[in-house]
Amino acid sequence: MDLAYLAALPMEEFATRRQRLGEQLADNSVAVIFSAQEQTRNNDCTYPFRQDSNFWYLTGFNEPEAVLLLIKRDSLCKSVLFLRTKDPLMETWNGRRLGIDAAPSTLNVDAAFDIEDFQAKFMELTAGIPTLYRRKNAPVGAKKRTVFCEKAPQFTQILELAPLIDEMRLFKSPAEIALMQQAGQISALGHIHAMECTRPNRMEYEIEQALRNEFTRHGARYEAYSSIVAGGDNACILHYTENDAPLKDGELLMIDAGCEFAMYAGDISRTFPINGKFTEPQKAIYELVLKVQKYAIEHLVPGNTIQQVNDNVVRMMIEGLVELGILHGDIDELIAQDAHRAFYMHGLGHWLGLDVHDAGSYSKGSNNGDRNSKKRDRSLEPNMVLTVEPGIYISKDSNAPEQYRGIGVRIEDNILITPTGNKVLTSAVPKEVAEIEALMQAAQGKY
Image (tube, rainbow, N blue to C red; front, side):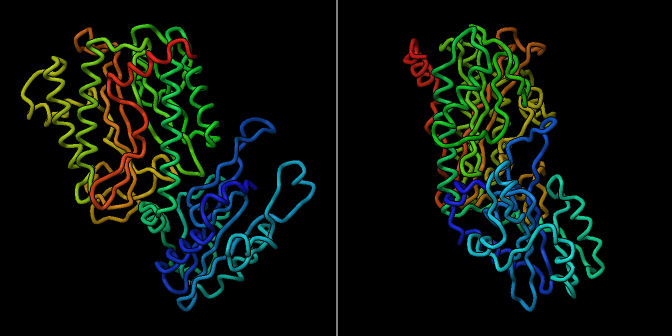
């Protein structure tokens, strides 16, 4: 067990979350939440274990092969954890386990049992309970147990649990915000280091490794997602992760990367010249993206919606592209035609938290768990955290004027919605043209 994570948040916070979730459950019901399972990489090797975000959110427990039950009878909700037993031989080979005896006091749960006894104890503990809450999209490896629970004869009603947890996760506590500020700061340090290390003829993966090293050096062992380190036209592939091309003099490098600190994600994008100096066409595209990003950050505040702000961003983007001669025609007609989609294909941002694309509905008056809704008309509220990431991507195969082809720019920051506006959690990374050029010039000969 990774005991380091236990210190990141007090166990009382996890207990409070379980209590809050329990208050929302119907009386005489049970909610079942499964841990992640270890995943095979190849043969006898596994990927580094990463706990399921919902399970972690409710337990703070970082082992596989575990199940949490929230059992509510007569308005009283109790938490029961199933986990692996202590096993000196297996612990010698694969690492320490918390064990059943220590679980109640360590994790503030009411009772703990052997995971091997799950089916029998589940039937015993839920006898006479008619309602089951479960997640339809349970973690990989939990499908059999999910099906077993759903088929238990005592249940006459099966409800989706995800919307309840998603809504809770959307609003960050002070302790979570502190961790996300740290994730943003460490991610920022990684991006600064990447700018300093970038030179023509280096490889994309060299810069990727520089990012990882800086994350680790500051206490974040893992990336929050696979880093995108995309030179030149590769930046026009939105989720480019090959990171195996040489960096060419005169082109831009777009990096989309963030660390995971104490399970919480940072998510930053920066675009900068490989040789440390923007060309005029590169600068023109970059300044347009920066302009709309600053506008978006200014207006993503309580009471406004992502959709509202994005609609204005699209208008500004189209106006700018027309001014540069990349698009042609009447602005309103181009907006009606979604003409920007040829160069700005994605949304303005997304929720951020335990997952880089975090939990929570984007739709107004809806708690349906639809994380991917295109209609993002929910009013922003304090303690939400989201990314702000406009971009323009002009591939080499585009019909745009030749000087702009092969330019891909994305600028992304993480913001916390506050009662009076927002706070940028990733402001340590330069994004003004002059600041980037000065930073890279100062680093010449240093790396």
